[in-house]
Image (cartoon, rainbow, N blue to C red; front, side, top):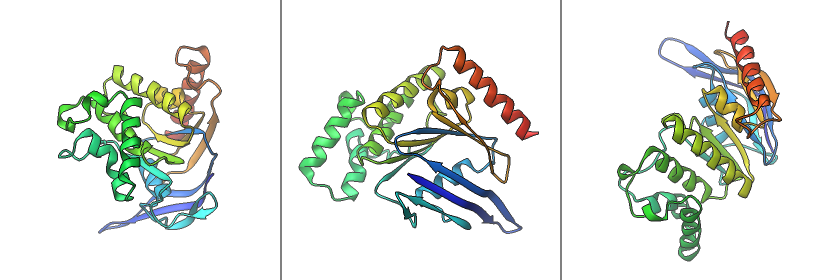
Length: 246
């Protein structure tokens, strides 16, 4: 379980202090998928970095499994917008990177990486470099590198934003398939209301800057794109956001 308690984050610039997040209180239950939407500048990425231990909150605290977050954790994986792949490393090497840093046993490493290559249909591209891959393939590599670490918490910052509509929907389905096989807590940031509703068991709505939690919507129709419930929830989220942005 992830607990975010009274978290505020203030950035200092040359001319002013800017409050990115204000008094965030949030609990992420184990093995659930949460999506987060809000206008640009609402602090979505800041919250991801804070939970990941990459950014220290100005006020408040974050704890995972009862332990206060003081820095990056072995149980937490982060996937950023630009995939974060090393262009000089092959698909296989990129997936193995976190395991190498952890000094994983070489035999176990090969088994883990081989399993992920199979699971994500990347085996034919194991020796390709990122520059030889499509956007969807790069995203699968980024997800594979995260899964190699067997995280209990996966944080995703607009992971599908650079993909075309067809590949974006395919990756959304792949993410749900991965989650069903390896249940973990997922928090995914997106600008797409439709994506938030399709993926999120709970949908978190942030206000304009400074970001505050304006609403958390339980979404019984998650994973069902072609359903009346999906469209009703999309309209509900859109209407709530339009009120908060005014």
